[in-house]
Length: 228
Ligand SMILES: C[S@@+](CC[C@H](N)C(=O)[O-])C[C@H]1O[C@@H](n2cnc3c(N)ncnc32)[C@H](O)[C@@H]1O
Image (cartoon, rainbow, N blue to C red; front, side, top):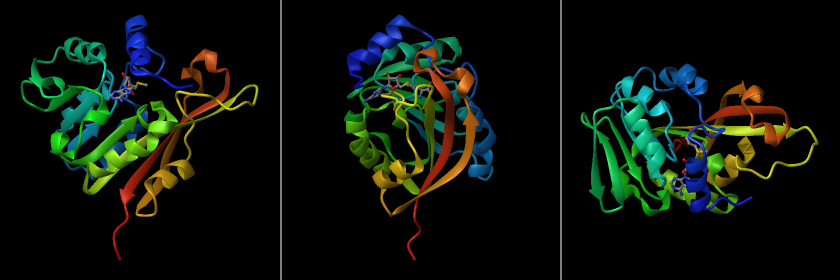
């Protein structure tokens, strides 16, 4: 099933708590982030297709600079307001740019594909949860090309992918798109390594309409291969 920009706007209009939303920091992020970055701070972290995830606040509280992007303004505004952040909204060339007063969190309201390395810069970490897997399969290759261009040297790209088995055994049409290590590797190519980090059984959180027997979020680390 393809989701259009209007489809995402409709989703946020109809529900402030869509099924992908978690009212807590993501467990895979919380349990793995510090180890993955070896306790470093002041990192530049990209959160594509961020919605109103609380992960942004948590990442900033760990002493980092966070940049998010979402094409729908409602969740972005809700995030800054409900988290009671001191913020301003600037008009940038690509649309509204929400910024905390200390500049630690910035969120562009914009179609991700209108942004580039020139507008965003490069990042030490990418936290991709319900982003890669939310995209239409036809957009995956250009998404990966863009995200690769945003990876600074040594960047750790943390991708939470989903895997599930439907009770009836039929494939899930998505979103979320079932995504396994081999799918990620094929898109990133041999210059990148894809390593499994941790799996989380999220079966109780799965949308009942998906009718799953089991549903997992699996965390992968994607890194540029070091040249020999
Ligand atoms: C499934 S939600 C995930 C939100 C967040 N990552 C989380 O974990 O809660 C996907 C989000 O991507 C946004 N989105 C979809 N396509 C986009 C695009 N091309 N550019 C920017 N945002 C997009 C939608 O508006 C939606 O908020």
